[in-house]
Length: 182
Image (cartoon, rainbow, N blue to C red; front, side):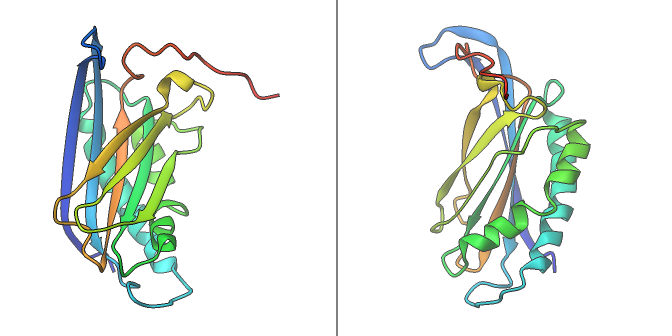
């Protein structure tokens, strides 16, 4: 069932904020797997075959991403961009039921809910992958976003599954830890 057309990796090393003020290096990495959507153009109700796609890609992609970070992963996130013949629920099926466990295993933790985003989009469309602290959901300084795209994807019958990791906060964060839950 796993029909991957290609995988794209991106790495950002941030050494200054938007105003040019230097900061300690922050590395953000993402993997984007372009997979065929077997349910594109259909009204299939049972999407469980897509759960396995998330689990298998979550394992392999997260392990690759951990290797290219400069430091241990602190933040994680996931996203899916579904081609125009698919449904948003197809993106949810590859992200939510089984992708998190292998990613948590690769990053060595993951007490926090993994931030996510999914949508239907055009060829060459972009998606914002949200990042959050893997163990502290109230660390507002670690909430961040990577905007991702693959120029020739998703085709109408594809899904771009994305996983992102970071080894730090935003550059010069000033928001803080946030309130403790009561």
